[in-house]
Image (cartoon, rainbow, N blue to C red; front, side):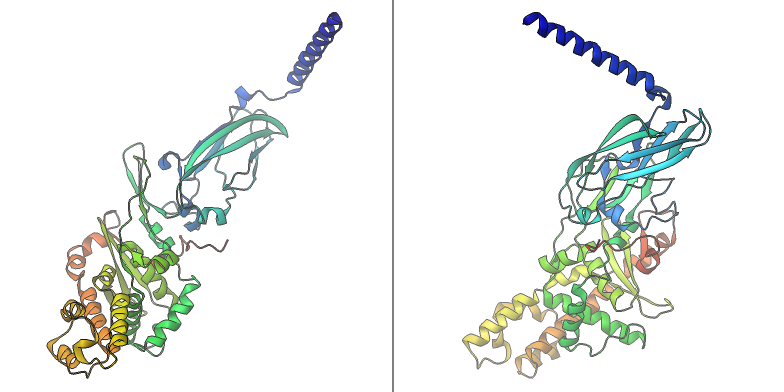
Length: 427
């Protein structure tokens, strides 16, 4: 019995070896000669940025788009025969669909390079809030014969990570801060309800964009400002990330709904929040980016002849929701309270600094309502925010106008819409 079993094993081994030899003889193309290679853009240091994939319009613009000059992936082969048909299949992962690339290799022995666009699962990219790893498998076929397989492991980042700059192998920095515009989302569904709330505030009665004069434009921006104060948006910096890359510079940016729901924003978060609402009503916002800071600007006329500034972080100087709660609690405890007794003494001392003597007298004489009290404070802060960055803007105007100065950038959101679209969850 044992001898029969051994005989069968020997026969099986012979048949297997014969099959392998037959398969080898049937192979037309030598993987060594084809030399199939897959590379990932060295600029990105092995990192995959969902924000870049979602925001880029992928136009043929080397300054912005993902194209042959700065594509993410490159595949190269040596043609084993003239007019050979190359097919490369990218397997599906949690972040991409199966992708097929097919090209003709005209001349035998010539090296060809192609830049495939992987079919991403954009809804999954948008919901990526923590970093992780994916393994992309590229399979090479020539004339329908499988020739070789390559694997590329990438570290994907949170969709909140905005790529600011990358340094190439020659030490040259490439600027990506135009990606800030991808976080400006004038299409966010929250904005319609926000505009309704703005009209109910009574600061303005209509939203007209540029249909009237500069004063009307400024009033509309002030109404957005008042809404942000009433909503309680305060300063909170979370710009740092866990990204260990030594060649890329990134910053965490909150999406519109994250600012709205958390009521927290750093300088760039607040800029994109305000700019989103401005864009929705037809205004043209501009984000000024300086080393370690960003502030907002907007044109007061359609011809873009006049520009106003707004330091959005000043919203954190006050806490209107806490002030309103204090007023409601005080009036509930003492419905007959008048004058300065309508809020606590601590609140009076905190907010008096934003009022003129005449306004304080009106408040204490009970001739100013609580809503008027808040509007007076908000107006003072709006004027302060409009003046806050005037000096630094004047000092750096030449830097903003210099396209070679990457430290200072004036990002016209409408102009950038040709190359970068809003990041949304609507995929």
